[in-house]
Image 1 (tube, rainbow, N blue to C red):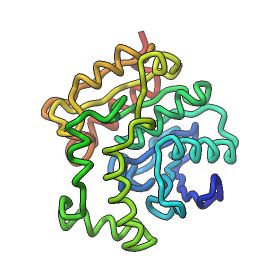
Image 2 (cartoon, rainbow, N blue to C red):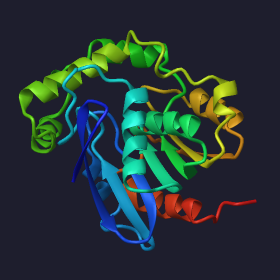
Image 3 (cartoon, rainbow, N blue to C red):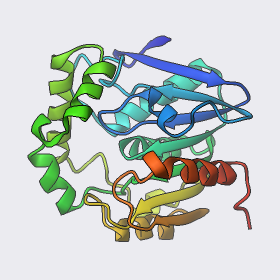
Image 4 (cartoon, rainbow, N blue to C red):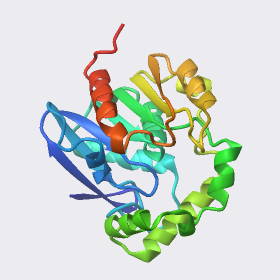
Length: 248
């Protein structure tokens, strides 16, 4: 399914039935990545997985990417679908997009899980971003990128350029404590303690600034520590949180 919004064509898929559960993938991923966590849509939820602008089957004719623009795109999708209130999971760049949504439209996000999403890019992340290229990816990762990004090699090269541009961008991922304090969603912050991009101190900053927040540190977890063997415990914990089991 697609919608034309903000100068792009946004593609999304949905699965299951029940209350909406928005899934926002990480940079260079796609909306269908939720299936690496949940084999099927969780009971009682309709999973909505958009491809962020320039990713998957979505377009980005201008070539410039900001998480703020991605948030505006997804907000437009929510309006198109008539969704006034949703729960959400955001992974890495999807989590940054979700932070923008939660500050732009606090009433929309009821509860959210932020995985490996920083309030700003630290120097260690910018160093990696600045030199990013396809040579840093495994053959399996490259094959998967070619399979899900349907607009071909020019789209993939655009995504590499997107990541390199993050290194010198300071006005998009810049969530200050006063800004974060406006978030009303109950929030679970998930970080690996061995994330090469974002140190655990950033998770602590989020926890201190977001009023109704919890922190789950994944031991020996890297960036996005929710896949593979970690998928099942993450799914169980995230669903318990989103279903209200972590309330005081």
